[in-house]
Image 1: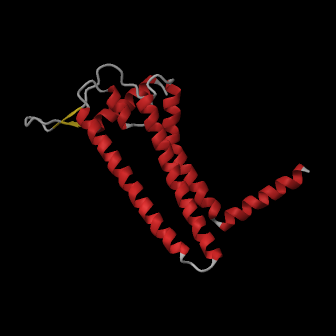
Image 2: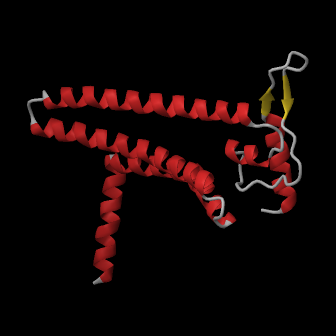
Image 3: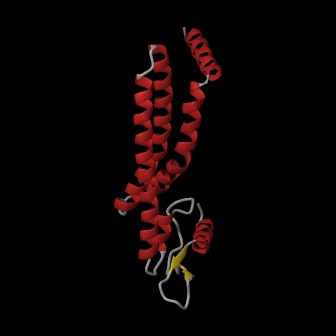
Length: 180
């Protein structure tokens, strides 16, 4: 990404990022950027913008951290509770075939949840502890965070459909025949 593109993205991030102030004269001000406006990602990431700002970013960082902890924490609790209830209901099913079908669906859902959370956690860890890493690592992790959940979601749920499964099996069979 060129410098001008990165500068434009950083300017747009600045326009959409507001620091709430506690004084009564002004309710909010845009964050000022002292020198560099080059982001380490190809999109507006909150941690990245906070690293570029030269003002006191504590309220915005605390807000961002609180929001992500509440969202992720509440999600994790509700997901765990729902799967406990699902497992209780599944284990009450009489037929093993029905249990396997439900477990298959549950596993697909868990894989989709992991496909979202693992890149998010990886990106957060790289941002928090990877200050000395090459910029390419930050860019790659940011793009993985954006692309992997969407792509894996399609693959995970797509493979579950019978039509796609039959097509994939027929492709494998035809590939195996042409290989011999």
